[in-house]
Length: 458
Image (spheres, one colour):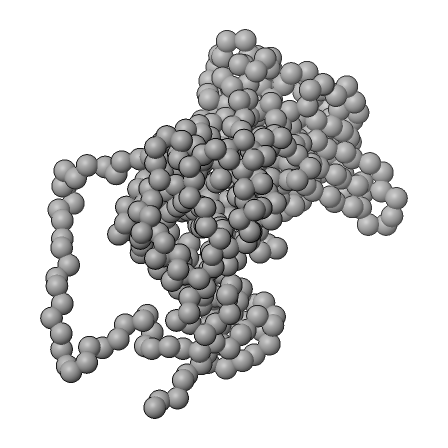
């Protein structure tokens, strides 16, 4: 009988090693290598006994074929359907990750209940909670009367047997890290178990025609825990984001084989669960204007949707030898670049002062178009000048001090005009006129300094 082989697998990135070491060579994490038994040849392929075996050929199709596009199941939640690209596709697998307590289970239970009430067979499998806990949540969400088939099980073999018997249209597995297969000797939640269970469930979804949603845990860096190969297996990957101190949640698509990958869905957390936000921009704006300066409204684009967010800044005298830089919701490297351009190109010296910058409402500003809004917030704070009221800013900053154009400028301006803004400081080349909005083109950052905070320049 051949001896069982083993290999060391990194529990952070999934890389394999022939021997143990304290640090993973692939991701650099320490103490993440765990010894796991290897069963069979790589990939799980076994050579047929007794020589060769006839294998059916793969079927090819023409690239210009007239096959109908995949049908979609409309979930009935506008924000969720937007992220999926018009609804979830049958025979597809979706992976949703997010921080603990962010609302993943709540949202998916609501969706399963809605589909069940519409006549579809919905199954909710939980490996983390007891049946009584889920039933109690369903009563709190007012969906306990929905005919959702509920199961609490972690054994993959039993779960697949139950799914084949129920023949559901919509399945939620909460979560993939709790599933385990008895064909592997690794512990539940390990890289090998997550990879094997994810592969088996995805394969079942492709052959059964059901829409499958897998819930995934995330690491402290915000990435879905387990091997990255699971993200390659599934058709769509979503991240559920938000701060517990705020009522809104953002569902962001990072991979979607059936729709756009830059869309977001915005939800509000209420007493009875999550509901689509009727006015997303209102969630990230203050209800009252600030007369002391230090605020600027940024017109962002999230997929095909314009969203207005407020950037807040505070420039204060430094109490210690080394000035402090504190950033929430923005990239610290872009702030360092912005401060350098302000000092070298515009004569605004902020190097010896503490700088605090935050994006209100917990929104995260990832577009380079937010450079001009951050500069406006810093300038008005440094000069104690509130700047123009009801104004928006967007534009990308170059190291030369020039303001570069950004995409979809007309959509940003129309959204600002719809919400009652009156002034817009935008890159040169933007639409010349938008009803109800006074547009001021900005070619260089020094021009913005002269317009809103001339006293800030030394």
